[in-house]
Length: 445
Image: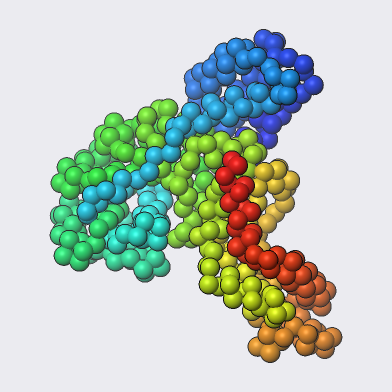
């Protein structure tokens, strides 16, 4: 996420390294590189120019404290301006009405249908709501089936009228259905086109007029760069939407849309899509995103993801097993599954200050634990329960059964033993102690 932009900004700040003070000359040189980095990230020339002009004015007006270097000061000023550029404060989704009607708009291929299911999962799991997904894309052949499949995955009802070609009527009937079933968040997935056209705009405007949504979210593919910003402006002129959703932010995106869409349409980014899984959706926080762009990590989001997977009862059970030296491969497998639920490993690593840079050339597969899981699943139940049984002949059999070699099996067993020792050292609080340590880091930020 934003790797190219992060690297270029870091290089621009090095110009001030070793400088004793900020001057018009060294600031101008630094900001020339900052502007170039922004333009390379597909930020429009006007916004990049305005951004660097503001930074320059603030930098030249600052007095340097003896404890702060010019480079550090410039990083802070750029950070604060990035936060402002992306909207300043976080703005939450409006869920106050009962039922709340949310209209989803965007071009075909932007990820509307997938986002609709992710949003349903989000409001159900994290907001305690009872959502209904509504299939109003009556043109794309697979759209209704796709929403049904996604609805099953997130265990949310999907309202369809497969014989109807009237999305306005479908939306109205869905609201009646939701009220009858006491469902309190109605998410309407609308049709898109490959490009903006009058028919699509009239249709979605008719749905808006008919159902009076409490929230309209515009979904845009962040990989389309400035085209995403231009599309957002066209939709906003017609719909006056409430917020933006950036999808595919985990892909090969340069970041221009995330940086500039707020300043163009004056509407907040509310969510970002970071993968294909139903829970691969992040609430957008401008400050946290600026932290990550400038290589400062995002400890707060990392803690929140860990807390979502933290099970107090399971932690107590694990603590007791550690104290009795009963930690086994079944427990190890559970810990791996909890980490996997938190998200992509490389994305998690980038949230730790300094780790994003350290791992930028490291290729971490989305299924990084595949071999480990294969080895553990190739053990018998008795071997998983009692790792002391794993002698040479058993290890050889496990290697053959898992499609790995004996070296990998030995490495895993050694890693398991080291993990057991490390976790036992923490039994004066166990996983809870680890969560407390992470929470303290969260408060300090």
